[in-house]
Image (cartoon, rainbow, N blue to C red; front, side, top):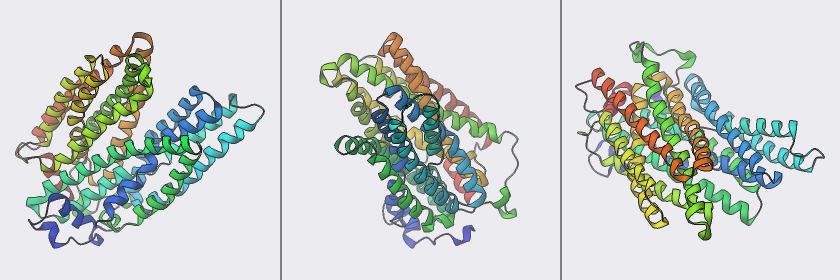
Length: 449
C-alpha cells in the first residue's frame, strides 16, 4: 500500500515536548508497542517448546535436540523468504498467511509426536524424519514480527521533521532490541512453567493461539500502511535509488555481524551450562545456566534502551567498533571466574555492550539496504542470529565435552573478535561513502524520506 496512506503524525511527534519514547508512540499509536512485544512471544517459545514436547514423549534428549535444531534451521531459512515476500506483496497478506500456516503446523507437530509415541515403531527411522520435517516447517513458517516491525519504524521515521529523525530511529530500534531480549527471556520461562505444572503439549498450543490472534492483529495494525510494498520488485520513479554493484556485499557484512552475535549467544549459553554443571553441581548443576544467562539478557535489554539517549556526535559507524571492542574485553572475563558470584558479575558487565551492539547493527543494516528490500534484509539479519546461535552451540558443546568449559568460553571470545573486525570494515566503507554524514541513522532517514 502506498506510503501516503501512512498514519499521520500527531503534533507531539514533532514537537520538543515529551520524551523520546512518547514521541515515537505518537507516530505508531500506543497499542503498537505492546502488540509488537507480545506478537513475537510465540517465536521465542517455539524452539524450547518443541524441545520440551519431543523430549517428553520420545524420552530422548537427542531426538528432542534434533527437533529443536530443525525448528531453528527452518526459522533461519524461512525468515528471509517471508521478508522477501513482504517486500514484494506487502506485510499484511504475508503475516496473516504465515500465522495460519504456523498455527496449523504447530498442531501437526503436537499430533504427530503423540501418534508416533503410540505407534508400534516408535521414534525410529522414517517416523523421526517425518517429525523433523514437521518441526522444520513449523520453524520456516514462523511470522517474523520483530524484523517487520523494524521496517515499519523506519518508514514511520520519515514523519519526523528532519532535525529529529536521527533520535527517533535510535529510540525505535533501541526499543525493538529490548523487546527481543525480553521475549527471549519470557518465552522459554513460560514454556518451562506451563510444561512442568500442566502438560508438555500446552506451551505449543498457547504459542499457536497467540500466533493466530496477536500476529493477525499486528498484520492489520494501521502502521502497516506506512510500508510502501514495491510490487513486482520495482521501485517507483520518485524513490529510485542509484545502483551500487557492491550493495549485496555491503549487506552481507551486517548479516555476518549478526551471525557473530548469534554465535556469541549460543556459545555463551552452552559454555555456561558446562560451567554450572562443573562448579555448581550441588546447587542445581546445568539448570542454573539459564538463570545466569538471563542476568546478561537483563543488563543487555536495559543498555539497549539507553541508545535512544546517546549523542549524535557518536556516529553509528564507530559505535559498532567501540561496542565490539568492549564485548571482546568483557567476554574475556568469563575465562576467570571459578564461582557463581564472580560469574554473575562478569555476565552483568558483559551484557552492557551487547544490546547496543544489536541496535547498531540493525540500524546499519537498514542504512545499506535498498528501500524496496528492507523486509528481506531485516529478516536476513534476524536469521543470522538464529544460524549463529546453532553454530555457537554446536562448537562450544563439542569443546565443553572434549576439553572443558574454559575452552568452550573461547568460542564467544572469537565471535566478539570477529565482530570487531567486521565493525572496522563497516566503519571504513561507511566513512568513504559519506564522510560528511554525522551518523548512519541519518542515512536511513534520508533514504526513507
